[in-house]
Figure 1 (spheres, rainbow, N blue to C red):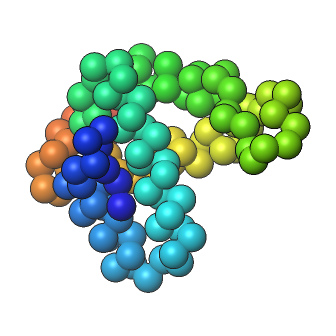
Figure 2 (figure 1 turned 180 degrees about the vertical axis):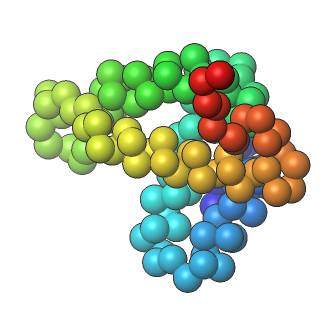
Length: 121
């Protein structure tokens, strides 16, 4: 489940997660997808960006943000250790986010232009 700042279900993210569940993925996969999509939606919202039209430069900024902003501390002990996402974790977030955007093309939430790869002319 993905909710917005006032705890309303995010309709598009919920539909995406329904698809993930419908494909028979594990509960852990669904949970990971939900947290990754929520991370992307929150990042866009905090910057006033439309999640369905991120733009290439914003995606680069999102990728940089994923690896450069410290993660929140875990638990109560040793909060002095600053942790960052590894490249592999950032790439996993981008992979899920890409799947979410591709899923959004079908219902018309995301334009095909956003979801299609661009080839140099």
